[in-house]
Amino acid sequence: MRFDTVPMPPTVDSRPRDTRGYPVPAITPWQGDEPQFALTDYGRSADCARGRLCSVCNTLMPRGPVWRVVGAAESDAIGAALAAGRPYRNLAPTLEGPGHRACMLYASMVCPYLARPNARRGLSADRPDEMTEHVVRGAVRGAMGAVVGFGDYEYAVTDSQVLFRFLDVVEFLPHDTADAHLDELKAELDRLAGN
Image (cartoon, rainbow, N blue to C red; front, side, top):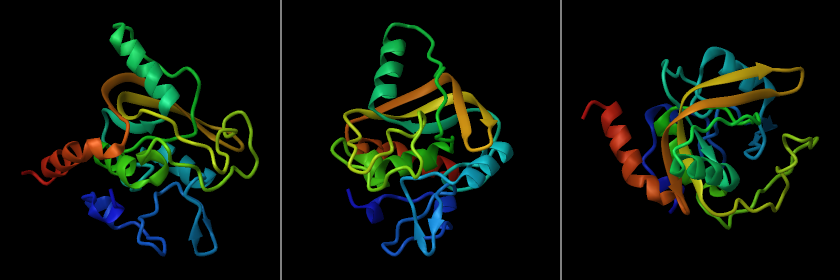
């Protein structure tokens, strides 16, 4: 699915664009005039965490559920816990911040890495560590990602990272290819517009 055919949340529409027209998420660092999509800007991520701002559109997330897009391993773990009737809590922190439902549904479809199981990362982390060692140029996303809603999140801002943990799964939308979320995104945008 081409990114320019996916309905865009209004808050995402106001984001800066790269030369291809892709909107640049709030936490994406820039190198000169080029966004570095596979990486996370520490300061921007910390500002979003502290201000309860969406990591995609940089606008306030109301109290209540938050969403994020997860990869194959976490999607499998969440799916297994839910199928067994067990609660899920990611005890291992992640660098990936939360966002609005519409923004995460949108991101899951337009980010080439998130949208397809055979997609590969375009960049590597500058200084890989245990939290970023998976950010390697050429790494494959793998099968079955998901857009997941959580009751809330916790965060810690360290000297070099912003770490997130998510609590209480409230929605689990797995996908092989993210175009599976198109109807959900359209319905969410209609709901937000009051239709």
